[in-house]
Image 1 (cartoon, rainbow, N blue to C red):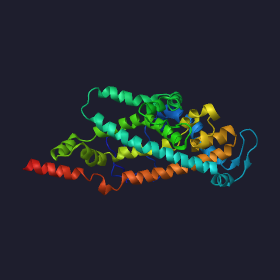
Image 2: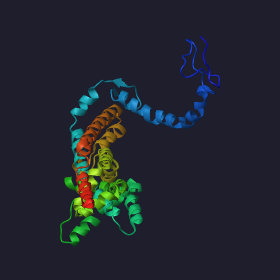
Image 3: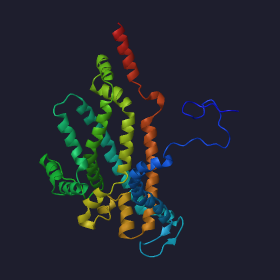
Image 4: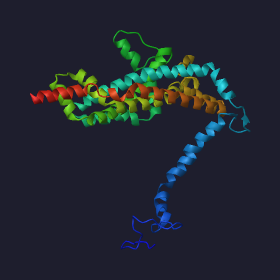
Length: 339
C-alpha cells in the first residue's frame, strides 16, 4: 500500500507509518537543549553542594555520635531518645513558643493596620514604605547591640518608664522581661516587611469592593474585617507561614543580647532566652556534639512543619467561606444601582 505524502514529503497526518520506522527528529536533536541547560547549571551545582548534600548528610549525622574530628559511631535512634529526655531542650521549646506568640501575633496585626493606613490617601506614602522596610535590611547584630543598650537597667526604656512615674523593668534579668525584649526586637524588624506584603495584597483588591463598602455605609473597621481580610487570606497565609518559620528559628537576638555575661550560650539568666536554635548551636558548635545537634535540627523541622499545617488550616479555611462579606456588599450595590 502506497503512503500518501504531503507537499513537504512527510507522511500525511491521517496515515499510519510502517512498523519499525521512527518519527523524524528535529534538526540538532537534543543538542539544542545543551546551551540553556549549561546556562542554569551553576545554580544546580551550588544547590547540590551547599543545599542538598548538607540536608542529606544531616539526616545521616543524626544517627551518629561524632565530635567533628574523630570517627563516627553509629547510635541509631539514641540521639532522639536523649533529646526527648533533655529538660533543657524542652525548656528551649517552651521559650521559643512563648517568644513566637508574643512577637508574631502583635506583629501581624500591626503590619495589617499599617498596610491599611498606607493604602489610604496619605501624604509621603513612598517615604513611609522605605522607612518601614529599613529595619528588615539592617544588620541584626548591630540592631541587637543597640536594643541591648536600650533595655539595660539604666537604659532608655527604664528611663522613659521612670519619667512617667513607673518603676523600671528588669528587661534582661527577669523571665518575662527577657521574652518581651526579644519579642520587641522581632516586631521592630519584621512589622514593616509584612506591612509591605499586606499593602501589595490590598492594592490587588478591586476598588469597586471598597466603593461598595462605602455605599453600604461601612466604616473603616467594618471595611477592614468584612472587605479586606476575606480577600487577603492568601497574603495572610503567606505572612503567617513565613513568620512562623522565622519565629521558630530565633537565634541572633538571644545569642548577641546576652553575650556580655555568658558568651551567649545560655540565653541569659535562668535560660529564659534559650531558644531551640540557640541550644542547637550550643550543643553542636560549643560542645561539639554534632550528631545531637543534627537530631535537634530535624525535630525543629518537624515542629515547623506541624505549625505550618496548622496555620494553613486556620488561615486558608474552606473554599465556601473565602469571601463572606464581599458577595453581600456587591449584591446590595447592584440592587442600589438597579433602583
